[in-house]
Length: 584
Ligand code: CA
Image 1 (cartoon, rainbow, N blue to C red):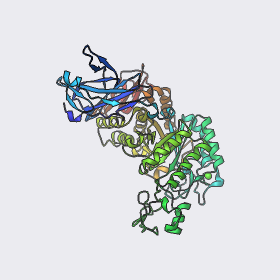
Image 2 (cartoon, rainbow, N blue to C red):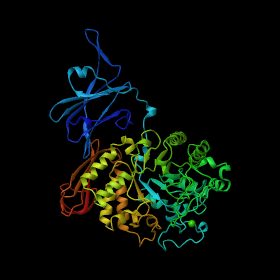
Image 3 (cartoon, rainbow, N blue to C red):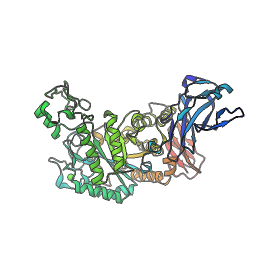
Image 4 (cartoon, rainbow, N blue to C red):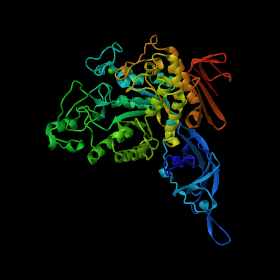
């Protein structure tokens, strides 16, 4: 056995309290290196006394299950329940040759009578309910719909910006406007309800200069081209009436350069009362322009990426903290929003987020905080900063394996499993899974127009652990390249909508909802055949099971089960290329 590969860390995603009061323990070992893992566990103060009046620790033993497999590692899992909420434990590992090893807080040694008698256990001294990572339940069952408000629907022509182009009359560009607004969203809430949507994720709606509104001017006002607070209140209320939650997008990493605060810095330099709000290295603030408006050189202040128009906020400043926390609270208290999605969240300090999390959850117990993190998000989701993250590693892995076919199916499954093992299971259940967003090319474009492949990919996404999100227009077959191409006007003309895609999306959402207990909470097991390019995913919860089969190869795949819940390219019992069948 490769003992150097054996790993466990207490009080992390490898040892944590679950929602049902059980304690989950994980052990990571080298792939196919171990034949059995047993968990020795008990109360740290539980001793039994022998005739010589010597106390020995009283423990129980449970077999751990090999639950998640990657190319390099196997993850063994077990759940135990402790009546006194205190736990100490160690691992007894049997390798492929039958040798037994003991792994505890201090050592990994051969298991002998002596070494077991001298255990120095891993400890979870007390399992505090208040420390439990407990993302809101409703998110686990939500099907999201992401809206880029300038391009979803124009419900009020009177608020259109100057130079607004007729709806869909030309390609989206970085600076054109089509007049989309909040009234347009309200007008289509019934459409979204009919589609099966239960959560709206709106890109920024606060007053800003650009069409994307990520360059906030004032977080306390609705952009006048989108409507006003009265309209927004109506939007939230009408969404709630239809069983839909509302998530707003906020950019707290930086302000727009048209903001009052930054304008004051430009005008008064070091004397500005907002000078300490930003990261300024030299006054007066300046930069050298290049041909690209979003790329400056010789900046004397820190910004988002390299754009001179987004000066970075100093979130260590008490004034900035108060200002941003006030914004976060304002939209919850006054408008009853359900979630914040946080842009560039990974570039803001942890201190800020810890306070932000406790404030928002104090105001609304089941509030959801979603961070934009494109990489490992452990540092934020493992300690009550975000409930979940935009699951880009998931998106990229599925894209690489299914759409771009850059990696083998087994490599894809390995990476998906590896991702799930980064987080506690309740966190995995509220990660936001999407295949495309306002920042990336649309799925249909990534699939090079292959709608069968697109439907297969969407289906795979919907069967995963995590909260699925549809980017507006995907359901009617919209295409579009990287931004701004992916931000085209929503197609409302029924003749131009892909009605087959719409009907399919509805069915897929219905399937997810009909079996939400399995998809939201169930186990997750793959079977992969790289040679024939086929995949099988089994999800189960209690007695219920869903088995999904996907054919990405050229050869037809024989399917033995009958009457699928959802299928594509299934003729009699033969699954064709890009075909799939889901059985209950
Ligand atoms: Ca309008």
